[in-house]
Image (cartoon, rainbow, N blue to C red):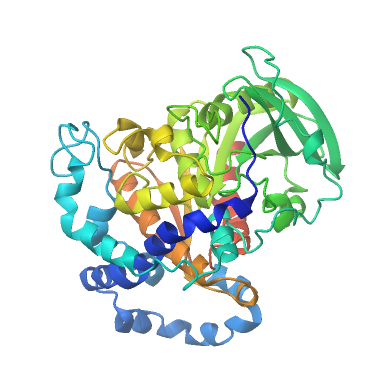
Length: 466
């Protein structure tokens, strides 16, 4: 069975109600509680930022550069960082969890909802306010927010004419090539950029990947770098949206990005899906890609993995599952607390946006798979891994104001909440987290690119070259 590479336009209409409600509720229903408990209300926030007033006034001229200057652990980090939101963020629904957190015995599919009745009612009320899907956002805007980009239309690759056509890629391969991953084909795109087709036994298909090779053919470490909810195949990815080729031009590292896995959460699904097919991306990313990098591209045993938006949390989870393979992991505006109430809204929005079933992915709400794919459930697995977690406060920069940014702000706020929760529980478990905060940046590649460069300097390079 093959995996459909989903264009990001599929992540529009069906995902709007749940995702818009989750993001907007974070702003209008949940934020006041967080402000009240953390002492970071609007007045306090303004006071804390008073020293940055001159910087803010000049933001329209050069907002992206100012973002880096305003990244610290003070006022931006306090937004949503208290424990007030734990009932909405903590892992739930598993028999492995204590009564105070989850369902306890896991006997009833929705038994865990009883401990959060008030929160559920608030969310229901919020959902009923957003039944008109076009009231707040257009489908293109939300589709792009879930895909992690301000560009969401199919075929908008800036390098589309240089890349192979869909017919030439390996995603529709149906021949079984055996139990081991194989490098099937490679095609030059430009410079040091190649398309590489890899047979994935786990997925029973051939997956096309974008691979940046270093100038020097000597053994090099590797970075597995994932895209957003469209899997990079719908028109928005690191090649089409950023200058990462230029950034890595003088770096001795292999950078590989799969073109597939749209709306999959890059997990190993429990069951094949009638629409999405077989989804075993954790195995592909954690085992099969590293084998190919070692066998075909002279990779060293130093590797890192990172993702944005949908793939941010999974990158941390995969690194925890394969600690001998990955020495570093990064989440760029991801959702690394994915089995709590708010996290499930995001997961369900992404998967249903791709017309898949979260029940096929993780099972019923009491299934352990929800927790086992949530990096905040057992962050101790990352104790020996360098971890980077980045978000912004969601204030759109000047270049983002020119596009559809309304929903992107709300999505970034949800990322802030889940990332702060993950950071807190991970640090309590003995994990050293490089938590990067920015003031400016909606949920777009402009922000993700800055986070990648920051993560390289602070987290990835030290781990890969030590």
